[in-house]
Structures are given as C-alpha cells and as structure tokens.
Image (cartoon, rainbow, N blue to C red; front, top):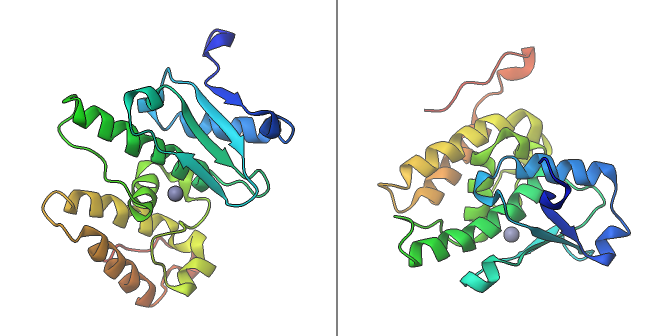
Length: 193
Ligand SMILES: [Zn+2]
C-alpha cells in the first residue's frame, strides 16, 4: 500500500467508534493472505450478536460492495479469515458463472472453515466454529491446530476425487483426538496418514 486511497477497508460509524490499532493491524495482516481480494475495498461493520458475519456477494454488483461485520471484543484471526473466505465463496461463484474460473468454491459454513484453516497458519489462533471437533480438541486447540490444518489441506485435495471429503475430514479429526498424545515432551505430533 503506497497511497492513502488504497487503504482497503472502509469502516461503518459503529465500527469506527470501536476501532483500535490492534483491529486494523489484524485486518491488514489477514487481508495479506487473500491475494484474490487485492485492489478491492471492503466495508467493515460492527456486530454484537455474532463473532462475525459477511454479506456473501451473489452478483457482479454486490462484488463491488464487499461487506463483513465483526465483534471487536476477543476478535481472532480465525474469525476475520472466516468472514473474508465467505466473500471469496461469493466471488468465486460469480467468476465461475462468468466463465472466468474452471471451478467454484462451494458455499456453506463448514466449507468456509475448511478453506480458512487451509489458507494460512495465521488463522489457527482459535478453533473453527463449524467443523466438528471432539471436545478435548476444542479445549486443547493449540496442540491440535497444526495437525487439523494439515488435515484440512488434505481434505481439499481429496475433494477432487471424493465427494464426501468433509465426512472424511471429520473422521480423520476424530481419529487424531483418539491417538495417545505423544506431544507432551514437546516433540511434534505426527500425522495420522
Ligand atoms: Zn460463516
């Protein structure tokens, strides 16, 4: 970003009142992981009802007005990544329909979580909301975050040939939680495949 007018976010008045340097930095760091959104302006609003939400663009006109809403308190990279991924779900469908892409990212919350975790380790700072995780994994997320991310990446490869890739992923995640924990001594946990 060289010029001021290239600042990629617009904030609603409600958001502006709650904005801090920390939130702006988190947004900029997150956006760097989304080259597809380069050059676009994203409106960031405030929500107190959910961790976040996004207006998934469904038509070309909407693609010009990308909007996400975030709760500022306890904001995580995982939430920002998830909401930006929702924008991509819409944009990729628009591109696909226009014949500009050979495939589209599927809609859906669980899909959004999988694509978000696969995208960057930046988004591992909190457990995903919609992927089914055994409770022990949710409670001890930092220990499982990287192996779960690797499984998400593997699931996206699997998706090319395997329609039930999400079931496959959740079964693998369950298996991961059942394995005896060897990571206690600080060594890295191996992958279950
Ligand atoms: Zn969502």
